[in-house]
Image 1 (cartoon, rainbow, N blue to C red):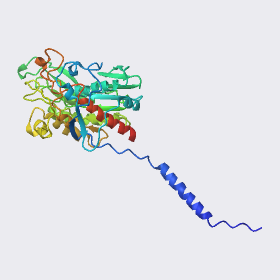
Image 2 (tube, rainbow, N blue to C red; image 1 turned 180 degrees about the vertical axis):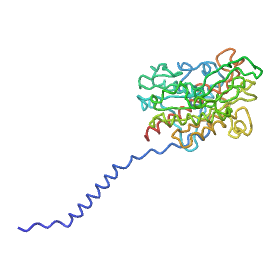
Image 3 (tube, rainbow, N blue to C red; image 1 turned 120 degrees about the horizontal axis):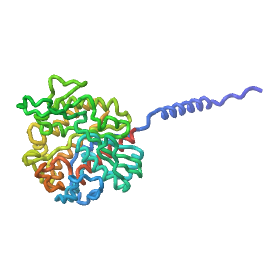
Image 4 (cartoon, one colour; image 1 turned 90 degrees about the vertical axis):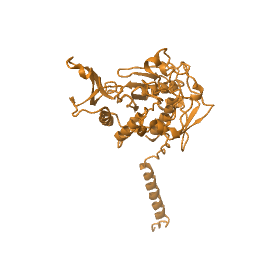
Length: 390
């Protein structure tokens, strides 16, 4: 019996089957589509929204008294918290504390730097506590303060390291020749991270760094200056304070790149602007304002070319941006949106009777609730985006 002839359609079926298998294999090997990055959340304007209210109040157990402006009866707190930040080309959603903590389950967030990062942390803790009333204070070796959220197994904490690099006081060894007025030095080892954060790099899944507010001459006057060391030896010729900041930045950024796991989201918060008017903190500087600044006023306040008392933030930002170029550390640029808010500092409402007489007005830190709550909204968006895109 002669064999049956194959249908002329059979080769076509084979061809299309192979084609489909090839296409399917190609789809499997292709990386999943990525979520487009969020728009520029850092450029925009503030609008008055009378319906906007804070997520927490003066009873939050994580408050620091000097920033608890509701408790200290700071004027215009309702107005301060009615301003809403609107990015230029998209909406900034308000953080949903429960949803955020749910997405961060079994993860930890760390802040490293000076008291402006602590200001940021306190806002974050009070916001997140809305979703977990069982949150409790958390402190481990090296941590300045923080909180543990047991419902989600999430820890959020702050490590105080004002210069980021290791520094220590060394009194003058001899009383001979005191004519120079030198009482001793603060030795800064530019290539050694401060003990407060050196061993935390594997604990946190998100790290937010900052520095800059202590890199000013009034913190370290000529009687007690910073002296910079590398590999255990003084740097010759000696560095001034700004050049020392640049060298520390380079070394700390290099350390972060090498020692912090690649899977950790690393952010560097740019400077939080000060709003001293009429003088610096120790020269009768004031910030008794009731409204945000207009955009046309910002350069008058902050452009270094005007040599005003608030110029440091932009100077430091320039150095930080340069140090982070080519790294995987993301800029958290909260400076511009905060420059507007001359109205939102603790000022004279510091919770202690003689605080202003001793320290002057606080035109550097922020009232809580207040501007840092918007920082929290932005940070949560960046973390969400990072987690969605892997």
